[in-house]
Image (cartoon, rainbow, N blue to C red; front, top):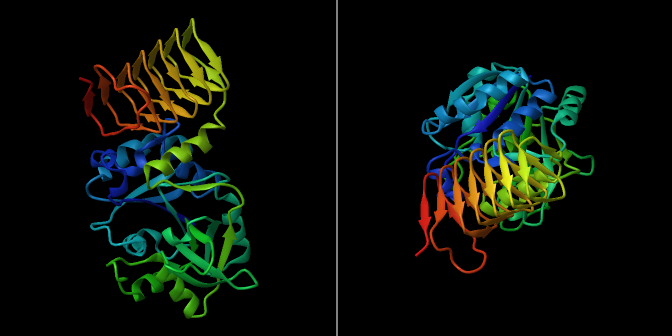
Length: 353
């Protein structure tokens, strides 16, 4: 079985963060989102992996995943999707890499708690033409949605329906045999101008192929918005092991925290779960809960809760919540009163009056 990780797209809902970085590289608990997917593929024994990238961010993706791939024993190939014309178009672009083998397609901005090992085992045992992971959601109109037959087969798929036939959303993990090549070559663009993976799977259904569902029994998160990213971090960071490697002086720790090597926490309070990156400096500040502070950040006289602060950033005096602060960004000067929420891109600066 070949793996395909889709790591293209523009990430327009996450601007300004995605003006300068691929959405798949945004860190959750100080680890890029895409790395969680690579770990799941390795755990499932899918080691030959194609990464579908855009021309704009492909170089950054390649650089970011090379070391994790080596550590996980993955053999990576990089496939450029010239235009963001949909998931089925990305799959069609990757067909020469798949080369008629079974294929597992994984969206690179998804998080699935229990991984994919069970669904891979089930697919290889039952041998349907296609198997799709589904999860019950409160807002199915925002997703591709499946309608199931009584025997668990997928009867019908529709992309972002106004009147959803069920609350079962497509998670973003798909398993195919070689018949998917015929499907992606046969469909036409949707009204929004994209080649929809739901249309390709519906083609398999309509031509009598076996299309099965696997229902996610634990959490799954699509990370397409700021709120989704922070919700994903809350889920992931709750399971981070308590591990203090750096220096903690005159400070109070509540709950589980990870303090990276070379980090310094001085006269501060850490309210876990919290992850502090290597070489960070926290002085006279309150951090957490549900917060990650990237490597080499400086938080001086401030407060950060429920937020993602990326590497090399500096926050002096400000108190922020439910925020995302990009790489090398800075908040300083006289801060506003109370706690504020910010979405700050890489190398950006906000200076108080």
